[in-house]
Length: 300
Image 1 (cartoon, rainbow, N blue to C red):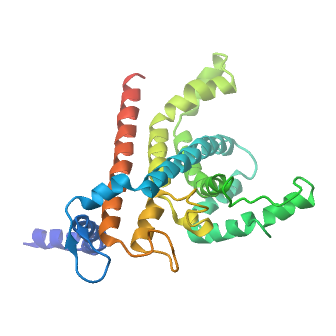
Image 2: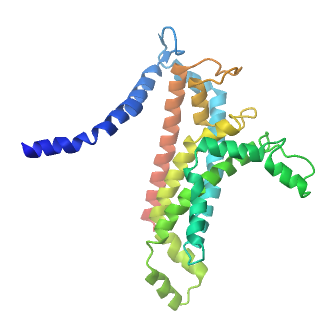
Image 3: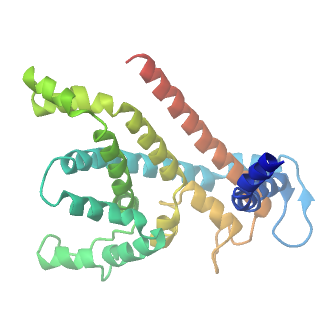
């Protein structure tokens, strides 16, 4: 009996997390899955429409443009943040003066609120009185202000902001992997005549393989579902050039005030269908990555 009470007491510590998971996780998912098959605006009566919402998704040009924008955004973020994080981790793994301070500085952006970070960068990249344009014009690097949040540079700007916020986290994970590589391996290779580049190419990179797979997986998921900084900086504009999948879904559920777009009215039913398709796309990419990384491990 005492053992049973002990087990019950132990499981009671899990109860708050379980309740939060059900209320804030499982229930909203089940709610959305139900309304995928309904025309429901958040008020009034709900009308069963079967697969009509999914047919609308297939024909929705704005949604598929947001998918393309998401891939561009995620690809740019990955191509910059992962190599940069690895380079910083290798450098800060050396026995250099002030490395702990530098590690803290590079990691600091990851603990700053995404919205706060985006507001700060908005003051930097503002086209009219932004700090960056003032700096460039003061030193004669440009003749006129650059529209960093305009059609030509908006995607590049949000990629830069996202890299700044993510690279410190990936750097820390790479550092943990580097510190698990025995020094004996490097010393043995040095006795055999291997230089620093050869050690990096044939020792560091292969032994970081498992850590790198995890980091790339996290980076892919975070890049595909991230939209908070984009919402603050550009709100998906201009003319939808930075509108990504999850921002599009968000606007269907919570349309911006005074919007004249197709998201002017709350679309709970259609938004649920779009959210489901978005989740399927993210899931398929994750599965493809798992399959590809597993295949690569087999050929090592």
